[in-house]
Image (cartoon, rainbow, N blue to C red; front, side, top):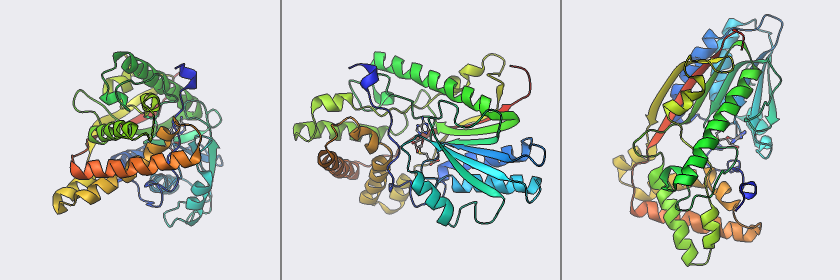
Length: 358
Ligand SMILES: C[S@@+](CC[C@H](N)C(=O)[O-])C[C@H]1O[C@@H](n2cnc3c(N)ncnc32)[C@H](O)[C@@H]1O
C-alpha cells in the first residue's frame, strides 16, 4: 500500500478517559515541576507586551489546566497584575475545540477564573509546523503529544505497534519518521519562541529494555487476530492497522543537538528519562481486582488508540461501532484473565532558546 494512503493519527476520543478528570495525570507531575522552574527562569517580555504561553497537543484541555495554571501563577508573581497573558492551545484541526472551550469556561481548575488579564485561544494545526506567529512564545508546554507521528510511515506486518514488531524495514521507516518529526517540531518551536523563551516537553521514552505498554499492545494484537477469525474485521485491515506513536531514546531526543548542544537556536537545559508508575497495577496489587485493572487499561486504550484503529476501516459507522464494542470487550477479558504490570517509560525535556545567532 502506498504511504500516502495510510491514515494519519486520529485525535483522542472525546468523552474518553482523558475527559472530565481535570487533573493532570500523576505521571505528568515531574514535567509540571519542570514547567514551574522554567516559568521562574524565563525572560519575560517588557511591559506592556503580552506574555504568550503555548500548549502543544492540548486535546480537550483537561490535562492542560493545571500545568498552565501553575505557569501563569509563577509568571503573574513576576509580572504586573494587569499585564495580559495569552495562552494558545494547539492541536490537530479535528480536535474537539468545543470541549476545550467548555473546560476553560466551566472547569473549576480553569486558569481563566481568577485572573481577568488572562486569555485563551487555539490553533488547529499540526505541531509539526508553525502554529503561532514567529517570535511570540515566552513559555511552551507539550505533554503526551510528540510521540504521535505526523503519519504512519509504513505498514507493520506483525503487530499494531512498531515497538513490539520485528519488522526491520518498518522499524527503520518509523525511526526515520520519528527523527524527521522531532526536527520539524523543534524547528517550528524555535521560530515561535522569543529569545530567552523556554519549552518543556513530556513524551514517551524508550531504551533497550521492555517497550512501553507492551502487555496492552500485545493483548490488542491478539484480540484483533481473534476478531479476524470471527469475521468482525479482515486480515487485510488488521495488517494495515498501526498505532503511529513512538517512544524516543535519550540519544534520539538529543541527536539534533549534537555535538555542541545547539539546534536552531535551542539548547537542552535539562532532560530526564524515567518510568511512570502503573497506577492501575498498584491498585491491583492492593485489592487483587483484575476486572477493575482491565477496565481501566481498556478505557485508556479506547480513548487513546481506538480512534486511530477505526480509521483503517471503511467509513460504515455501524461497522465501526461494532468493531469498537467487540474490541473493547475482548481486550477487557484478556487483561482480566492475565493482568500484567504496564511499563510507562517517559522523557521530560527542558529546552532553552538562547539569543545567539543561528
Ligand atoms: C494524549 S493527548 C495529550 C493531551 C494532553 N496534552 C495531556 O497531557 O494529557 C495527545 C494529543 O496530541 C494531539 N496530537 C497528535 N498529533 C498532533 C499533531 N501533529 N499536531 C497537533 N496535535 C497533535 C492529539 O490530537 C491529542 O489531542
